Structures are given as C-alpha cells and as structure tokens.
Length: 475
Image 1 (cartoon, rainbow, N blue to C red):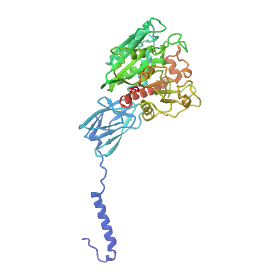
Image 2 (cartoon, rainbow, N blue to C red):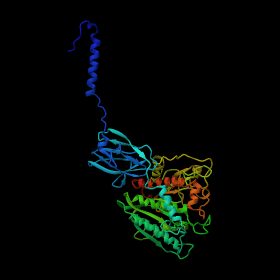
Image 3 (cartoon, rainbow, N blue to C red):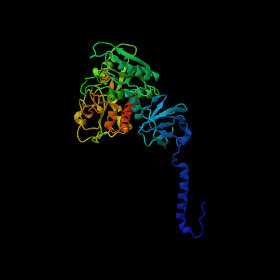
C-alpha cells in the first residue's frame, strides 16, 4: 500500500501516476522486449591462433580460422574468400555443423577495410572489424616480374638467368625443346601429374608439329573437366605484323609465367572437376597445340567421356589497366566470356562470374572511358565498347586457344591487354620485358597491372569451379 503524506491528498492522482510509471518501467525491463545479447566473439572465433582483436589479416595471403559452436556462422565481405577443406565456399558464409569448423581466409591484395560478421544460431549478429596490413600475395606482380626476368635474360651463369628465348615452334627447334623441359620441371616440382604432349603431323617447318605441357590436378568429381592455359610459343622470324620476336615477353611469356604462378597457388586448393593447367604450342600457327590436346586420344589428352565445363585463357597481359600510356590515358583491359551466340542477350553463366569478380570483388571502375577509341576491338559489340577502358562482357572474339574449347561447348573467358595499334611492339623484336616496363612507366607499374589481371583470372577460376550453372552448352 502506498502511504500518502498529510496535506497532499489533493495531489494523490498525480503521485500515484508517477509511482505506477516507475514501477512500469522496472517491470518492462524484466518482462518486456529482450535486450540483444552481445556475442563473445573471442570465445568462438580464432584467426591464426589468436583472438580476432589481436589478429592481423595480410592482403593477398592465407589465414587460418577456427569457429566453434553448432549453428554459429561466419560471413565475410566480397573481397575475402572462405575455404573449407581446401574448397572455396560460394556466397562467403559458412556455418558450424559439428561443434567446430576449421578453414582458411584469402584476402585479395586490394582488400582495405575488412569486417567479419559472426551470426549466432539465434540470429544475433556481431560485426568484427579486423586489422589489415599489406601482405605478400600468393600470386604477385613482383614474383611474376622476377620469373619473367629469369626466363628472358641471357647471361653466363645459368643459375641467375635461364635465357629461354627463341621459342619458335618448329621441327625441330632446340631452344623450344629446352624451354619446354624447364616449364615441365616447374609443374612436376609442384607435384602435378605432368606430361609433354608431342604431336608430329608434318615435317614442314612452316606447319610445325605441336608440343604442349599438360599438368593435371584431379578433382572431387571425376565426371567433368575444366582448365586454364596460355601459349608458350612466340611469333617466328618473319611473322606478321612486326617481323617476329625472340623474347615474346608480352606475347606470350607473360601468360606463360602467369600459369606457372597459378599452378603454385592451386596446390593449396581442391577443385570440383579434373583440371588441366596447360602451356600450348603453335598458337601462332593456328591453335595447333590446343587442338592436338583436344582432338587426340591419349591418357593425358582431353577426355572425351567427361563434361568439359569451362576454360580460361591467358594471352598478352600486363600492358593493360591500371597501367597508363605515355599520353596519360589508361591502356585497355579486355576480358571476354563466351560463347556469345546471341549478341542481344546473355548466353552463359560464366559471364556472371566475370562480372562479379570485376565489379564486386576487385571493385574495378567498370564505366571508365577515354576521349577517343582504342585501336582494335571485339567482334560483335565494338560500337558499344570502343572507348571503354575495362571492356568486360560476352563476345565472340577469337584469335587464341580459348576458341578450341569454345568450339567443344565449354564456357570460356579470354584475358587480353593492349594489342595491334595500342602496342607497337606486337610480334616484333621490340617485344621485350624491358620494353613492357618502359611503355607503362616503369617496373612498379608493370607489376601492378599484371597482378590485377592475374588475380581476376584466379578468382574467376575459383568461383567458376564452385558454380553448378557453368556447364557445357552442348551437354
């Protein structure tokens, strides 16, 4: 019972109202809407064996994590990939189903602010800001440049430079054979099942045989196959339009070295389908190398009893966005998916992967353009893209080894930088590593440009590998 002091009877209603309000506030605190419980993140999540508040995420590098508690989930932003048991997890979210979950995180080199999100089984979310520092990317422009320099340099000390130049495909060419043995040793040294595929179908030096390096990584599903590749041969003497080359730095030692770096990175991941990582020959003579692999019957050739899902091609890269021309304009960057049977609609699922990687993960400035046009274009959409810096879309463009696999129904992506009028050293003796660095403004700029396209291609592969909608268009 509330006691009302003498002399205050006239104010009894207002006093009682205040008392009930105070009591009501107290009761609602106990029985009303529950306050959001705060997750104890440090007790359920560890990164590199440290609490999240103490861990440092380095860009471009792997990081181990452990999440505990059935029903607890971890969500990451688009520029961080999650791997569990070596498999990339699409969607960027994983949930514990058996008390504890071990996995790895991979940041892109371009990640800046990284916020992880822990989601409890009751739906409570806790945002976890992470400490981020620049790291040493698992695929880096610096390592690419060092390996390019080793391959293209000639010196008395073979431990300091390889001198793997003059790689013209012919019958025979000892320089090509020597280089092929070096490349084969790289893949074998990483543990890949590696073969030299040699097809002798002519003794005419103007129509040379093919000699490919094929490295296989077995997948979790043996009913399908997919791959990446680049041609390792270079334009022979007298080849148009520049008269041939001896280093072939841009076309296509650049793509060859990118495949060597991808092979190193892929050792640490699992793939869904049997995967070939290939260095082709005779691309300059009409895709003879990749066609020999695709159309012949041998133990390590393309299997004809498995679904060919997709193929990603690396040819002439590094003289491209974000590098600048001497005029100050950016070089063009081309990434074309296919097949593009109908120019008015999107035909294949891999186009979504291509777009997602560039827009959402790499956050590239997709609408950047120049005041003018670039020197050469694609087949069907050039009127729409002639001034576009990042020319990323479906198209029918050919002229490289992806055509071999597109003709067999595979969904494909083809990466290409400046060419023809945008790179005067194309197919000429001036196509050297030194010239590549000169035309983009120095070694640092070249390393930035090649690293960007290598990460784009690597991310495309990792995501396409886990995308069920990417199937053979003829299956």
